[in-house]
Amino acid sequence: MDEERIEVSEGGRRAAACLRGVNPADIPDERARALPSGELEIYVEIHGKGRISMKVPAGRWKWRLPPN
Image (tube, rainbow, N blue to C red):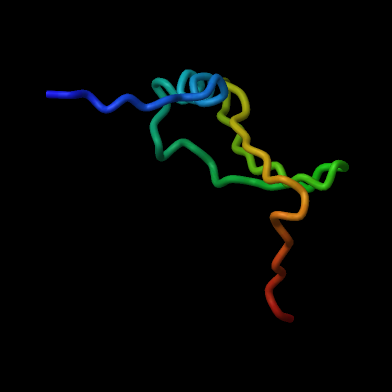
């Protein structure tokens, strides 16, 4: 049987290492912040382990606020 090969980035390897041994129920909701560069950073802080994040390029996202 042929195995499917999945390429994992260095960031993906670091994220997997950060999550090793963490109960999924203990992972907080993601947060987001706009960076001065115009990028959007989406992240979670894993207590005692560190931060896992990804960036969305400027111009590829916008805040959608709920109506008043």
